[in-house]
Length: 246
Image (cartoon, rainbow, N blue to C red):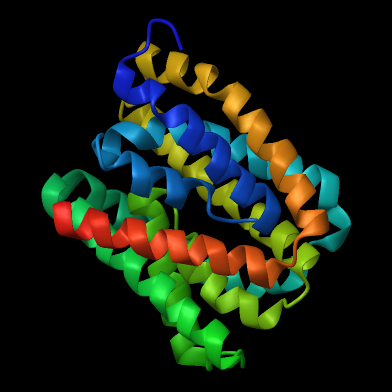
């Protein structure tokens, strides 16, 4: 990626792999890229580069899979709770010390990955009760506002209610669109989109395309359970590293 700092150029293979995961499962692109990228870049510097790419990927997945979207549950039971948490996360991103923010993100990723691995091992996937469900959805909104990646927490809830992998992927992709639109507007008003972030996003488009093609292939040919298990193991390891290094 000529003209880009080496630190941003190093995101190319990470983005390709991470967006392959998102194209296959409907989540994971940003959380993986931010978790790995935060090992050498500040989280606030990574997000303006990634959010436009993540939004574009969600739009493509929705356009290709709109028939699978669970519109009514998303509109009535999911989006209001998630949307309520986003402003809190956006506020935290600009007010919390960067070191603590990174450490907290690492703990979050590690905790959710271990929780999902434990659930996958036990086979317990019953829907959550009302208060627990609402709390987790709101916390997912907080995390999405702070890191543009409330995916693990939201998947933790929706995965119990939408067991079909095509329906879950399409529904998650729809959910990301308004949430990411809010982030894009916020970043623009804060002046966080610059020439450097624009060049970086454009330079990562080939990695984005590779991820989309690879993820679509994996979605058709690999079981969601096996693929998700491998992703969770990677997330747990990365989360532990980020939490330890802070």
